[in-house]
Image (cartoon, rainbow, N blue to C red; front, top):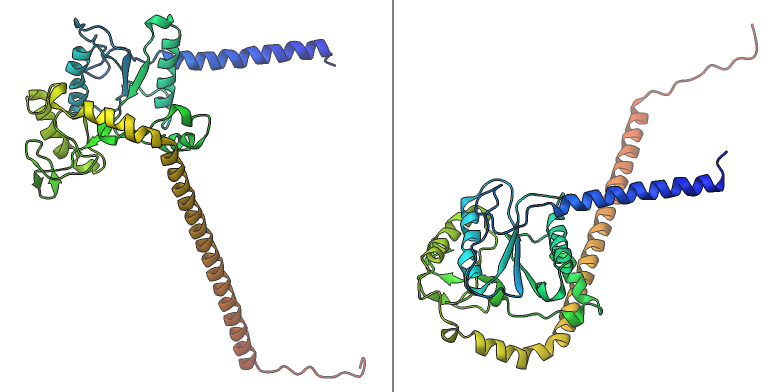
Length: 315
């Protein structure tokens, strides 16, 4: 028999083994290559140092898998931006976990790395930019609804960080000419001097869409790389914090209400669909039952009645 002291000892050993396994897995995640921008797959390339003071903002992204020269060019386009403003950039180059989990694990590892530094040396902000990694947006949408997170969340104009190409240079239905003037403008369409352009969707056509914009980005044309005074950023930012930011709570309340209604409608339609399927199944079963009864009746009509002779006892 095993005594209580032995049970406690076994429990301690099992706990230590579990902790060791967890720590080993976590260290493997932290070993993922996340130094400066790697311009070529599976090689670490140190980002050039500039005379600009280091910013309190860091940039995070991830790119791994089959080599893609266009995506490598897109990452490389961040180098001049980093050097000009003193940004550090970290790019995950290997998949560390299945599914979409590499991204949150990588962000968490970078957060822990910053927290391990003295406070005066830490980055204050981490900006994530990605290549259409959208699997975590539903989780983020859920966090926005929670009271404990809402005070630390602000919905800002999409164009500031995630502008779309918009309607420029229509060519066979593809808006692909960044030098053409916009034929119409939407709030999330890119303007000259903006931070970046996001080519969302249409994966089969992404190369055709991205290539002209990459050509322009690599040329550093003055009509696109404007001085701050020549953009509308300062006025937009000032007006946003004066006019729009105070509406954040109400804006999120409206968003939550809309999403709740959409969820109710989705559940209602799901229920109606399930009930319709159940009704259809019941009708099919009833039709099959009636058909079986009809077939049995026809069979009885066709079979001759068999008479059994009466007997009065043994011969």
